[in-house]
Image (cartoon, rainbow, N blue to C red; front, side):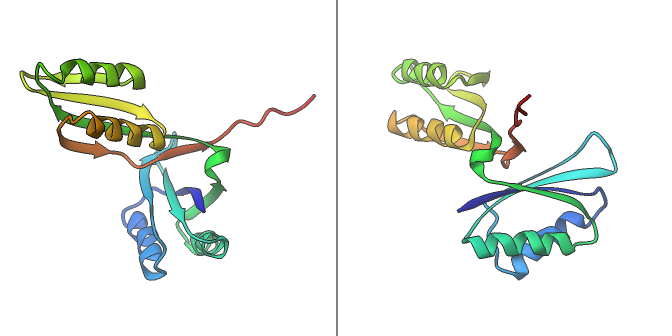
Length: 164
């Protein structure tokens, strides 16, 4: 079972280390981690995706709530959230696989952001599952991946329409 924790913290040095240390000390796994300032420069949002059984996931939330620098925690499941990840992937191409590469990019709605005679950098901003699909499709097409850079998952809870 996976859980997403959106943790608002005071934007000070050492806060991320304290949060990560909590996970390390308790042997909790971090599947994904992303940190950034919010609209308020004094507050950062740490988005953590973690997996485990129900008890482990509840324990993570309890331990996070004990941290002094934590302002607020929102937790939600993958089904309750909109998740995005940024992926940059540099691939080798030639005249034989160029058409396949463009077709994959077109199907998945990626953007080509840099090219040279034999290298191309592709950008994708989508769900973690879709970014993984891109990498699998490149491998299946025997397109050589030179380098990959991905952000951690960013997530917001889905908007809930209130009935009138």
